[in-house]
Length: 357
Image 1 (cartoon, rainbow, N blue to C red):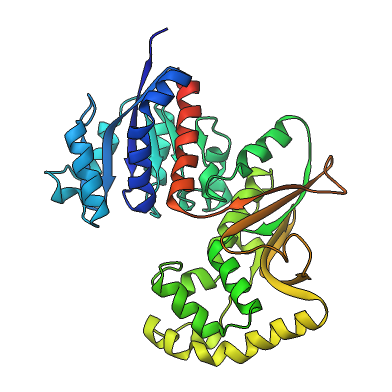
Image 2: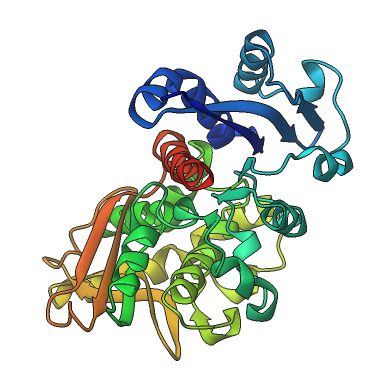
C-alpha cells in the first residue's frame, strides 16, 4: 500500500508552532510506517508573512525556519515571504491547516479551508469563543479538531465526544484548567506571598508579560466555554461568572504599576488560605459549568481531595454524566508545555489525515 501525501500548513511559529514543525519532521518515518501517511509542510505563516511551496518546503528551508524560531526571529528573516492576505488563495483542497496562534483574526480563513474540504486543527481557542451563532457550525464540523484548545494534549475533547457518541448525557464539568493558576495556588498554600509568586512566575515565563492576562481567569473561562459547547450546551461567555485574582482597583494600572502594587494583595490572599487551612481545606482556581452556565473562581476544597492535592502545572477535569454519576470520569495530567501541546496537535492532524484519505 502506497503512502498518502497530505499537505499541511502551520499558522504560528512560536514555542508550540516551531515544536510542532520539528515533531512533524522527526516523526515522518514513524507516521509513514504506522499510518501510511506522509505529512508534507507546504506552508508556514507568522505575523511577517507566508512561506509557501505547493510541492513541499525544502529540508533546508524547514531547518532554517527552525533555527530562526529558536532565535526568536520571524519568517521574513529566512527568505522572502508572501503576504498573509495571499494565504486563502494558496491553500489547496484537502490540505490540513493547524492554527497554533493566539490570533482573533483566523476564523474566516479557517472556515474557507473547511468549505473547500480541508481539515483544521486548533490549539488557538479564539475561533471557538465568539457568539454561539457565529461558531455553531465549527463545533458541528467533522473536519475540525481542537483537542489542544483545552488541557494541552490531554484527551478531554475526545472523551467528551466518545461519551456523547455512545449516548451518555453530560451533567456537569469541573476542574482546574490553568497550570499558571495551579502554580499560584500551590505556592500560596506554602505561605509564599502573592506578590513574590507573581514576580517569580513572570520572570520565569510562566505568565503572560502582563500577569493579569492569566490572573483575570478569562483563559480558564474560554476553556470552560469550549467544553460546555462540546457537551452540547450553547452557552455564551456572559453565562459564566468569573472571579479575577486581583482587585478591581488594579485594572487600570500599567503592567509595571500593577507589579509594584501587587504586594497590597499579599495579606488578603494569605488570610484566605489561612482560613481555609483552619478548616482542613485549601483553595484552588476551579471552573464549574453545566447546561445553565457556571462559575470560574477560587474555591475551598478539602486538602486531601483530588483538587486539593493537585500540584504544579497539572490539569484536572472531572466529567459527571448519566453513566458516571456517583464517581466522575477524571482526566488529569500536564496541562501546559510546548512538547505535549504540539504532540496533541500532531495527533489531531494524523486523525484528520486518515479521514481525508
